[in-house]
Image (cartoon, rainbow, N blue to C red; front, side, top):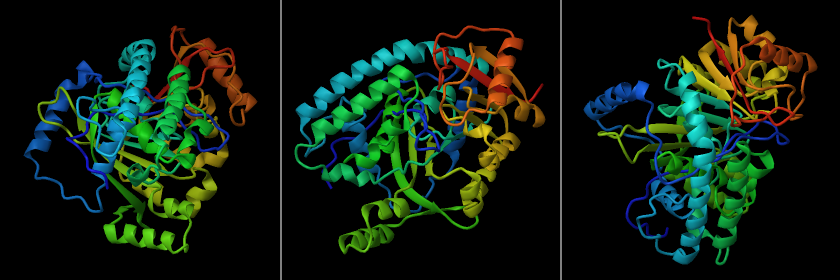
Length: 426
C-alpha cells in the first residue's frame, strides 16, 4: 500500500443511473467548498451532533479501506488539495488534473447548484426523513446531496458494482494521466447534462480506478465532506449486513491468483456493495457521521423475488425520503412493481423527473403530484408507455405552471427541465 500523507478531505460525485444497461443516468458534481445546510434544519443538525457527541464510539465490523479511499479522494476527486499528493503518485499529473477539475466544478456550481439547490430547498418539507433511498441512482450521490443536503443515510441502487478501491494502490505506470483525463471527460458530460448515460458510468468496469467510488468521492468534495471509512458488505438472508473481514478478502485474492475465480466474479462477490462513511469538513461544531451505501442490484421483479434481502434491509429503515431521475421510465413498468410498491408505502414525499410514479399509480396509492417546469412528452429512454406519458402531460397542463431554468434528470423531448413532486396530501 502506498504511504498516505496527512489526512484526506472533501468529496465529489457523479450522477444518475438506471437499472437498464441501455438507460441514461443523472449527473455528478464536484468541488472543494461546501454547500451550507438548509436554514430550516440547522437546529436538527445541532441536535444530531449533540446526540452523536454523547454516544460511545461505534465499533464497526469488517476491514476498513479508509486509507485507500482518502488516497483516491486526493488524487482523483481533488479533495483536501491543501495536503501534499500522496507518495508514489506523480504530483504534476495530479495537480494538472485538479486544476482542470476545479475549474469544471466551479462552473457547474455556478450554472447548476447555485440555481437548482435553492429552488429544491423550498420544495423539501422540513420534517422530511433524513434516510434517503434512490433507486436507479448509481454514481449520483451528487444529485442526492443536492436534493437532501441534510440526509444522514443515503442508499443508491443500480447495476454498477462499487468495485475494488484497492486499485488505487496498483495503477500501472503511465496510466494515471489518461485515466484521470477519462474521468474529467465523463464528469464534464455530467456537469453539462445534469444526468449521465449508463455507458458513461460504465467507465468503472474498464478503468484501473473504481468508477462508482470516484464519482461518490467527487460528490463529497463538492459538498464539503470527507470520507472517514469504506467497507464492503453482502446481505444475509434476513436482510442484515455482513461486512467482509480481512480473511475473506484474502481468500478472494488467493482464488484470483490461483485462477479459480475471475476478476469479475471477485468484484461481484466481494466488491459490489460498499458503505462509505463521511463527515463535514466545515460548519458542524461536532462532526455528524453520515452514511452512503451503494448497492449493486437488479431491481426488476424477477430478481427482487429471487433475492429479497435488499427489500428486507430497506423495510427495516421505516419511513424514508425518496428520489429518482434519469431512470428509463422503469417505475412505469409492472416489471418493477416490487420496488415501486416499496417506495409508495414507505415515503410520504418523493422528487423525480418524468421517470417517477405515473399519475394513475400515484393517485391509486393516495398521492397528489405537484409539477414544476415544462413537460410535453418524455425523452425516448426505456419503454415509454403512451397512456402514462399522456397522463403526465395532462397533469402538467392542469397544474399551475412554475418556470425552472435547470434540468433535474431527463429533460422532456423539447429539452425542457421539469420536476414532479409526489406527496401525501396534507
